[in-house]
Image (tube, rainbow, N blue to C red; front, side):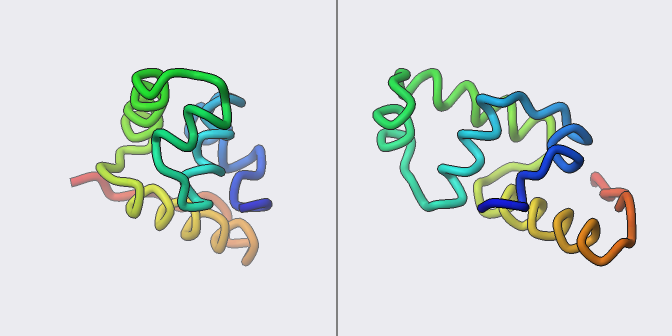
Length: 88
């Protein structure tokens, strides 16, 4: 995922270093089981991290999370600056 999880984007949402790891593994297509094994944590802990990430970013799914980070990355990369999400 690389630059999609750059500090400016993560800071905007209050994403912790461990949550960043989770996001990178989600973006790589890893399952909760695979993430748990890779990070030596329980599946329940992975699910807790996912819930926290979803709450902080106001998304409801992994697909929506990846879409958000792609949008944010493109905005930062284009020099557009902070994009305001419309939360319905």
